[in-house]
Length: 306
Image 1 (cartoon, helix red, strand yellow):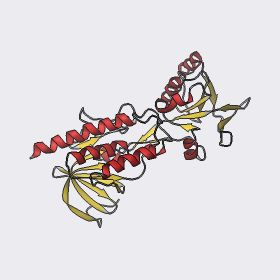
Image 2 (spheres, rainbow, N blue to C red):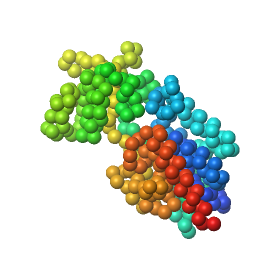
Image 3 (cartoon, rainbow, N blue to C red):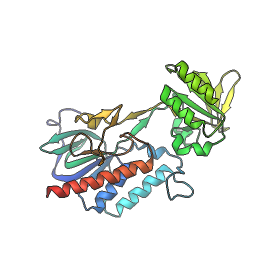
Image 4 (cartoon, rainbow, N blue to C red):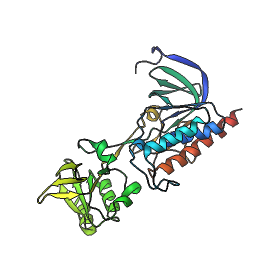
């Protein structure tokens, strides 16, 4: 984006109590709380919530048969609509601090807000395979064993890794199945210690095998000697934190995770963060709990200004 001062933008003169950036479970939960706190806020969503890719979640409470990510997002938006609040589908490009408030820049306008809540989440790093979204939808490709390893217990499971962190995920999966295979990529770095841990856990290792998604037979073919078939593949390749808006304001981070206090406030006063963009367990219920904490602190913070 060019200089904000020179950009031809629709300037919104009113100052919102809060602008929420991100319309996933965390952002929508924060919006619900702020609506019920009778706060004047705006919520933006770029349409990139990874929750939308969840075929079905069985560890989200109260849904006996599980709930698809798209369905959960729709329910949260419907609940928010009861308070005459809608999500603005537009990407926020930049944040600036000005006279104790925040300037929030999109492609079409500039908004002012007393506080900002970031719920922009992360992007899963996908393996270099075709039709990954279809593979996710059909359960051939997965990213979160905490979320769904129970659904593939006692199955043949592959875990594609890049480093020791990915190996730890394979060891986690080993609790659910005796048949776990670790697949490395071109630049994977594993030490002798890592390989010894795998042997002790009964996990096999294949280096840079060709992987073929077989949608017809709902399995994955591993080109090796001999050719192997597995039932599902976990991608343990890490994530990309969508933290640039905060970092550009000088927010502190650790390995990409934004550092927050017990109220979910970052090192930048008035800038909050909730969900996977912060350190901790990447789970829907955790993200929503953090959003509730942040929204409540924002409400109390604004009360003190009166």
